[in-house]
Image (cartoon, rainbow, N blue to C red; front, side, top):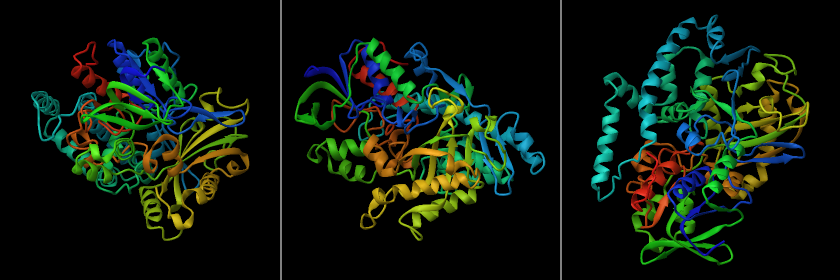
Length: 540
C-alpha cells in the first residue's frame, strides 16, 4: 500500500465501493480502507455454522439502483437476482394464512374484505405517482441549505421544485401525507383487512424503532417501495450467493478500474492540517495522505471518533451528538435440518410460501405492542415479549448456501431496545435469551422449527454496531425522520455530500437518500467530488 493517493475512501461497504469505482473511472488514484477482513460492509455472505452460509446482516435485494447495476457491469461480474414467487406469507392466529402478491392477494381478501381488492388498485396508483417523482430525486444532489448557498445550490433547489411540479395537487397532498403521517393512519384510511395492513405496514417498522402509528413512519414504508427486481417495480428478490454477491461484483469492477481495496485496515483518525482533511491515520500509527478523503461511515462515528472535536465548530459537535440512530433490530441466521412445517400451510416439502417473506406479526396493533413493550422495559431489560419476525429461507431460492436437504434462514426481528442497561449486563448478557425467544416465536406458527435448528448466529444491536459500525444497530446509518432527510441528512450544510471540512466528503447511507442497499449515496457523492475536482466522466 502506497502512502499517498488522490482519494482515500474510509469503509468498504457497498456505497464506499460504488463511489470508488466511479472516481477511478475518471482517472483518479483511489484506495479503499476497510476495517473488517472482508469488504462489503453489512452486505456480505459468510459461513455462520459449518457448511452453512448466508447474508450476515442485509439479507434481501430490491433497492439496488438499475443505473449502478448497469454502469458498474455487475451482471458481467456474476450478479444474478431471482424473484420470490410472491411477496409475503402471514400465518394468522386462527390457523389460516394471508398471502400478499400478484395472483394471491385477491384470493386472500375475497372472503373477508372484498372491498379492499378494489382499494388496492387506488393505493398502488397513489404510491406509483409519488414514487415516480421521488425516485428521480433520490438520484439528485440535494441543495445545500447551509449559511452560504452557491448558484449550484439554487439550481438544485429549482430542479427539485421542477420535479415535484410533475405531481398534480392530489399527488402533492399524497406526498405530504407520506412524509408526515403514520403508516397506521395511512393504511387504516385505505383498508379494513387486518392482515393486509400488517403485510403492507411491516415496511414501516423495518429498521425503525417506532410504532407504525408514529408520525413519519409512512415515509419509512415509502422508502421500501422505491425498488425493483429484474425491472419489476416493488418486487424483492435474492442475490444468488447472498448479499455478498453484490459487493463482490462491485469490488470486481473496482479492481478492473484500478481501485486498490485494502481489508483489515482500520482507520483511527482523519488527518486535518490547516483546517483541511489531508489523509488518515491507520491503527498502528501509519499515515496515508490524500487530497480527498471520503467517508462511508455513519456520520456519528465519523465525527465522534475519527475527527477530533477541535476541528469542528461547536454547533456541529452538538448536533451530531443528537443525530438519531437506533433501529430496534435483532438479526439472526439459522441453520435448519428441514423446512418449517406451518400450521397454516402444512408440510416440509418445498412450497411457494417457503420462498416468500414469512411474517410473524398479524396486525399493526401487534407491531405497536411490540414497540411499546421493548421501549418501556416494564417486563425485561428491553425487548418485546411478542416480537415481530420476518423469516426468509434463502436456501429455497439458492441451493449454494446449505448442504443438500438442509436450509438456512434469515430472521429479521423487531422490536428490541437498541440499548440495554449496563447494570443488567447489556446486550452481551441477554443475546441468547432473545435469540431463543425469536426461535420460539417462529415455532409457535411452525411447530417443528425449534427442533430443526442445527445452529445459529445472533446479532444484537450492539453486535451490529461492533461488527459493521451500525450505531445502535441502525441499518440506515441514521433514522429516516423528516429532520434527517434530503438537505438535512446528516445535517443542514452537509446534505450535498460535502463534509464539515474542506477535502472531506460523505458517501454512506447517512447521506441522501438514506439506507438500504441502493448504491445511490456512493454514486451521487462521486458526482459531486468529480465536479469539485473538475473531472469527467461524471454520473449524470
